[in-house]
Length: 280
Image (tube, rainbow, N blue to C red; front, side, top):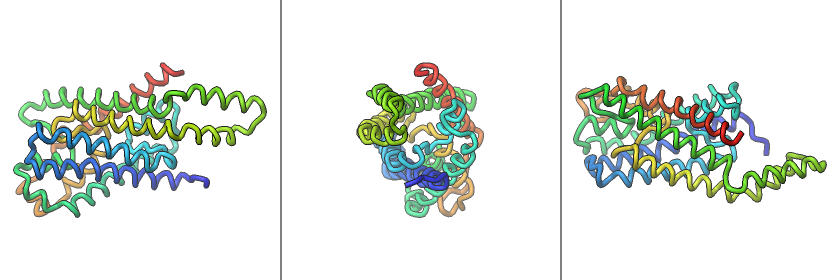
């Protein structure tokens, strides 16, 4: 079956929506049931993120490549691994998917907001949050966490999915058969049958990597590592009626939003450029 660009956009939309549902859905239930006890709930949030990444990537990798993250899409394009002409469409699909995913959580879980003790924690079920008492330190600490977390995530993604164990042997085999006169597309199709298991294993390991990164950099409610995962749900929170969240006055913390929205783009570009330098 020929995969069209429209099919890829739909896959990115659905994949990002599922990613947000699994990640933020876990955060919502953990915060609502545990009243934000970070020591107890951090592992649950990390596992939710890990499974969210693993499941959504596995579902749509064969269609769109499962970017599901604007920072990854832009980083790949900046390094020549993706077409610039498709970036806007991919990123738009990802942001729309994040918004719809969060709306599904709101529709199905809205009663839980009334059980959460503070407005700060309610916002944390939508987007990343920080302490307003010292904004400079929040920007520095949050910026470093997002940068290194996103850098390791993207760097790991590149090596796990594009330079996995045995990939060089496969590339050499494809080159040899192509030089011998075989059709390259046919050879690649045969090779993909042999490497499918390796790619699946790589995506599972990517989920485990996500668990580790959330445990390290995410606090009790998880990091962004993905601009769509933060900006889409933050917009939903901003425009939700107060009657749904049970708050008298919402604070979307837009002063902090640039950290989880902008920093991952910078980290992704650095990670992809370093990967490209190392592997050629």
